[in-house]
Length: 508
Image (cartoon, rainbow, N blue to C red; front, side, top):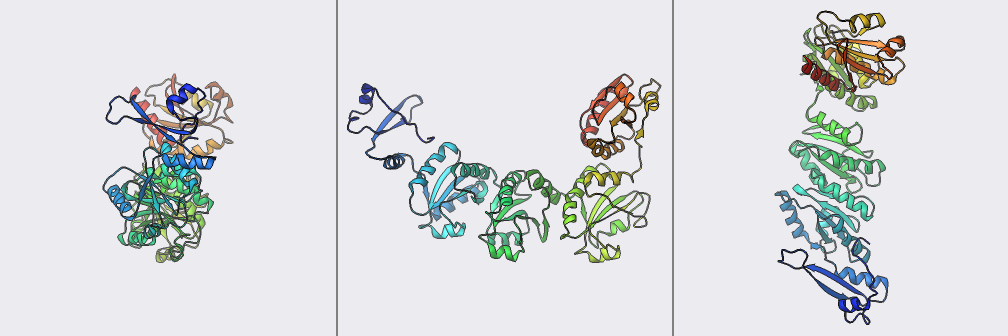
């Protein structure tokens, strides 16, 4: 099934036209071939092969023998193919490593071309090419691997189930920036000092199995010139993993020159991409004894947030992606600087600042010089809580609470020099409203000077909210006049700012 079509002919005249000796040889393989050199694809010829067999296994074996054979490769041809791929060839290869011949493998193999029409297929006999198989760390048979564009090679570590092998081949062939690494290749990476994101794993580990497809997808977001991705199988390279201090699977690290950064984000495609982008283009400044002087000499026009941490500290690890997210969300405020100090390597700084626990977050506010004034953070380690705390130290437009009387007078009354209002209708018990509060503060500060911002508590001002047809929370309206308003549906600060600016540009 799925390999060739099978039919029964009961019409004796048709049977005789196809195969004159059909009574003596009732089973045939009818191979239809397009005529070579003909532009008319409808023209074809047929070749009849008699199948002389008495049982199912024998019939299957003989039919498989008549189907096209995969290309047999040896060490020399494998190296030639890899060289061509490194030089720009676009033909990825699915390669099966085997010992001996097996009908079951033959059956699996000959189904594959119908499912992977854009990949080339090869067979390597590890009895005849033992050195090649050993260099590729093939340790069981049959084993499957993908040799892809740019010469990257990846072994399949899943179950020997055909549809799973095919799914792996499709994924892997697209992930040309992901390499299965040997110890020699790893030490070469460390010596050369390029940027690599490496997953240390064991094939039997369930979280590792979930992470590998996410690694493949994440690797497709980056060019090899900026960062490359690698995997190291610790069941094959146990000495290397032990030497590198790998004690749990999966362990994922970002290597860049002599620095190693541990990944502690969400183990999916988006989480990996965000982490790698933060490593390549850091939004949080890493401070050492030389650069910490920027904080010590900060001007009154700067606001610094500094995270003092230790890499082994679990809460610090969870905080790190939140600090990167905070830095991105506050990037519109040029006076805000966010830094981090590793207290295991910068002991003198942490000792001088009397850091006793990790993580410790300190804010050096606007209006003060250097370290003269400091605020200590004691809240939750999530980006919403951190952002709300930081925004409370910023000057700018205050979000005005609007009761019924103030709302009618300020927003719904015609008067000279009317300025647009952006109003957040909320309820204190609404979880989404609580999360949106720091976003709205950020929106207000970003749009300062273009609009006025206000909030209406619909629990206290139920009649007013009914009057303006607010039935869910939070609801945000941009009032261009008492008689014209636009609902803003996004609750992401950057999107709200973009939409408000777009409306204002069109109207004024």
